[in-house]
Image (cartoon, rainbow, N blue to C red; front, side, top):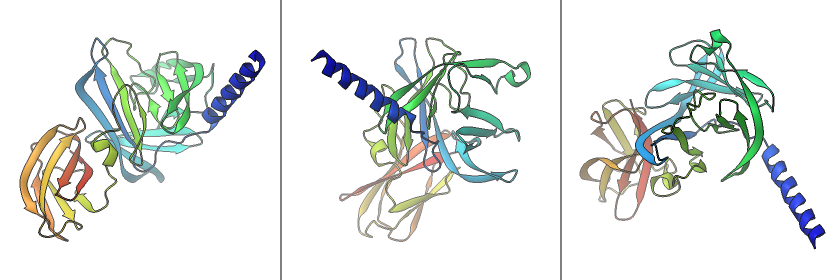
Length: 283
């Protein structure tokens, strides 16, 4: 009996390792990261930072994906399991992540003067973490930062080698790709808005990112439907409500969002028969 249990345990271990060995690339279309600040008791506060991919750009002849945290933060690309990053205020390309690394390998922390100081950080452990898509390979660094393939750092997406190791710190609460939740850390990412964000193709919002006005094109609502329109933040709190309107068919309707702080929001249109949600960024 013990022999059978040992064999079963070994098979489960090998299956886990096989799953973790499958490489998961960084998102290239609809990636979204939500980092939340925890307090001294490691409880979530109301301070969140969201990063979202915002289309393509060309830098120095190379193709990149723009990333925004309410405003343009920079651009990234992936090649051979290495994530390269050009910050918004620089033309220099940094190696942000290198997922070819293994135990004992060292990296140079690319930010905070470390390029000049040649500060090095070592990979101290390689293991795996279970996500909604199976096991992802995970790197633990001597700075106590943790990287997950296809997701990024658990602490600071664009400063991945840093971990301030204080009681109140930023932690990756949720990561989604192609509108599907992939990873969460003691945070409910699978209810409400997060289930339907960006999945409804029946209407569009523009410009996105928006500055003062956001125009809605809602082709699928019937002309005589009463539609309520509201704006919610990433915590699903109602930030703006607009007077009800009739479904505009192929027409458009512009709304004033100038009073919103910069960040990521969800615009919800609701009638008696259906609910439609679309994500947008306020600059």
